[in-house]
Image (cartoon, rainbow, N blue to C red):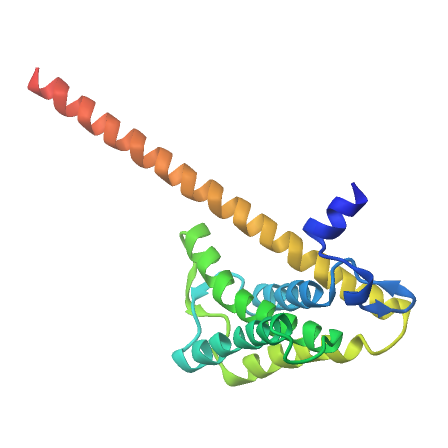
Length: 199
């Protein structure tokens, strides 16, 4: 069971692990970065605009779209042997990807979930964007501090990010299925009403 979790859930192997304060993060370097970046971004959105349903402005979206690229470049260059693997790069590209993913996913989830969502983006100003990036970069530099408290902070963000995505996907799927069910019931009732009138 432990091997199954390490391989398929955490992607954890000793060579790709990040050690902080005598402990290793539950995920490998890249996945830990993704979940920490995603977790920080979701928490930031909850604090900056919990019910903001709009995507950020076009320049911010373009910038965040570019944040997806480093991870793919990292995987590509490693796969084809252009360079040696470095866990710091894995972690940093994971942070970049997770942050961009959160920026796109959170407003989409809010738009799907809340009827009275606010028609504005959570990242509605350059200072907020800079603050978000500062927190994410802070996580990258924190991992170099070999202390058990830092391990707890990073591990907590990783778990928070992972569970946030699970909850968002589960809730989103439930909402979509519920809306489909209500739509089908409504159409059936409309057809039955029409047939009754015809009789």
